[in-house]
Length: 395
Image (cartoon, rainbow, N blue to C red; front, top):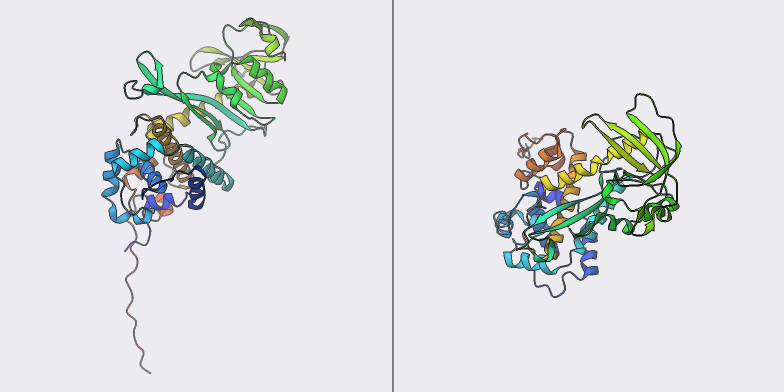
C-alpha cells in the first residue's frame, strides 16, 4: 500500500483553504448555492488546466472516472456539466483573481519561486510590461468584438523580474489600446519598467519622471526631438549613439514638451542577430548605455511568460462563452501556472517547464510523494514494508 496521496491532492494542499473560504464569504460566491461548492468548481477548473481537458464533458467525465480518489481532493463527487457551466457563468471571477494574489504573495514571501536570472548591479525593482491577445470566434463571443469578423481579449501583464510572475494583471477587451493601461499602474519610486513602443505615452512618461519611476522603451520613428548633449560612446559595446534629448513634436495639438518637459535619453543599439538598429528612449540619466540596453533585452522574459501560459495551459480555447466564465478560466490558468512554477523551483530533475507540465498531466492521480516524484519521476513507487512477525521469547 502506498502511503502518499495523489500528486493532484498534494498540489491542491498548497492552496490555503482558510483563505479561500474567507474569500468565498467575502464575495458571497456561494449565495443560494445548493450543494455545488466553490472548492469543487476550483478543483474542476484546475483539473481542466492541468489535464488539458477541452470541454465540460471532458472535465466532468475525467473526474467521474476517479470517483474513489476525489475524497483526497476535498470533493465528495464529480461535478455535472450543468452545475459547472452555471457556476462559471454566475460566480464572480474576482474570487479567483483574489485567490491568485493571495497565493502569489504567500509563495513570494517564502521564496518558493526562484530569483532573478540576470544579475544587475543595481538594486531597483525591474518590471516588464506587455500584453497578449487571445483570439476568439465572434459568433461564440459576440461581447468580445475586436474587428469586423474577429473577437478577442487582452491580458495586460506587469511582470516582476524578481520571480518572473505578474505583479499586475488586467483582462480587457482587445480593443483597449496598450497605452491606456499605464495610468492604472501604481509603481514605487525607483522602479524600472521595460516595455515596447506600443505603450508610448509622453504625458505618463512625464508623470513617472516626476515621481522617480524609470522607463526603458523603444522610440517611435515619428518622434521629433532636439539633442541637448552627446555622450561618449563605450567601445566594443554595440552602442552607436547616446544622446540627451528634449521632445519637440506636436501631437493632438499639444506640444510634446508640455506633456514631458524633462530631459530624456536616446540610445541607439546595434542588433547583431537581426542586423538592425534599435533606438531606445529612457528617462534614466545615470546608468551606462550598455546597462540600459540589457534592461530592454530583459523585456524578453515577459514573452517567455506568455509562451509558457499559452503552450502549457488552456487559455486559447474555452469551456464557456460567457465573459465571466472566460475570466475564471484565465485566472485559474494563472493559479495553475503559479503551482507549476513552484514545482519547477522545487524539482532537482533539471527538466523544462513544458516537460514538467506534460509529465504531471499523465500522473495527476499517481500516488507518490510529490518531492520524490519531482526528483525521480520514473522510479517505481515504494510500497510500505510488510508487517514483521513478532516472536515470543521464552523465559
